[in-house]
Image (cartoon, rainbow, N blue to C red):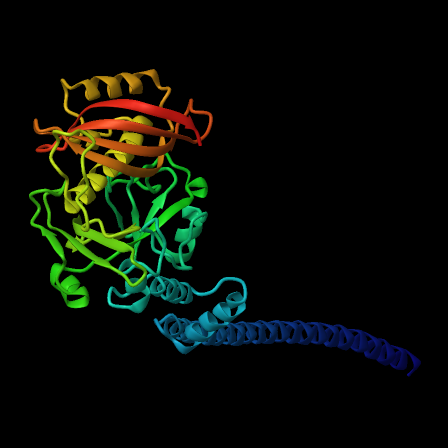
Length: 418
């Protein structure tokens, strides 16, 4: 019985051990299975997360592209010309700079307004009072106004009124034309390109206004409409440029006599009435003929005297320009090769002692016919040049050909400091 009990206990113990191993193996297998399932689940979850992340990134990228496209379209719209935003920005910039620099259009308006000051009607009382009659204006024949005045530099003039409209040789000097004003500068010409009668070597800051004359700038018919027909007319046969010339003359209430002369000149706008200049006489030159100094000479009429006065003045102004500049050929209208005057003048120029030459005033004192196709002109001139030590005044006899107006010879009578 005891032996049976012990055997039973042994069998039970062995059975227990066997069951324990079986349970252990079953647990191990179950644990491994669970681990595999968890790994599979994690992998699946990880794949799901990756898929969702990729979808999210794709969605974000799509939205970003849509926003970029929208911005580009808006930018193209803003870049269209004359857009409101562009105009507003432009206005803001202009307002900010307005106090410092006026807009160009305003500058143009101001310049246009200034140029209007240069216009003087031929029919106005301001012009007539100075050029017709003896009571107004001055004895120099210049035109008085307060727009462009002697002493102003060319730079000052053109900063305010713009560049000159044109320039032309006026016989020794080359006036610059601004509206109805013909301005003669101290250097005898305005600063410019040199393609016209200007001089590119002049410094405009120091080229000062010397004299201002009235320039009509109208046609012959307009001159007649404003002033009537002239008292004296030349069809060009006796004028230096071969174009018509006119003179208005008369005696005023004060007993003095005036002769106002002008003529046609070539301009960029065609042929126009040019500078108008008045000469005053203390008495009527027509009351008596101007007698010659030699008994056998013919008498000179007042008309002839005025013509010769203009000729000698033009010659002496051209002479100053000839001495001051190279390649100035206009002097040869009055100087003919082979004459004593030509030889004297060209020799003087070669010395360079007569450089920087200026003619300030010319007065014709006497005219004498020589009965041989020549006339003797006694004239006084105020001048200066490089070696004159300031202004001087001289009186000279000039022998002129009555057909060609050439200066054949001359003789100095006196010369003193002025």
